[in-house]
Image (cartoon, rainbow, N blue to C red):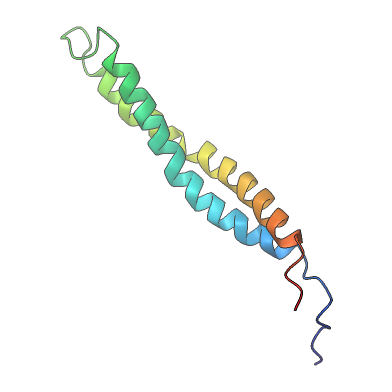
Length: 96
């Protein structure tokens, strides 16, 4: 098996796949955390939260909304990671 010449560029798809994997993990953690903070702030300004009339609805929303945001976060992370990884892989490297 021969080695490729030094001036040949690597395939840009390899960087996209690695970026998509890292983006998937980042999106799965970052998006639910951001959504949790947004819901927490929104609940702080809601006058019904914490009263007997609430019956735990604000707390259930604080749990359910971030849990359901995991799947969109993963999808957003895959798309963003693939695009950034592909862009990074297509840039020419430093010349020796």
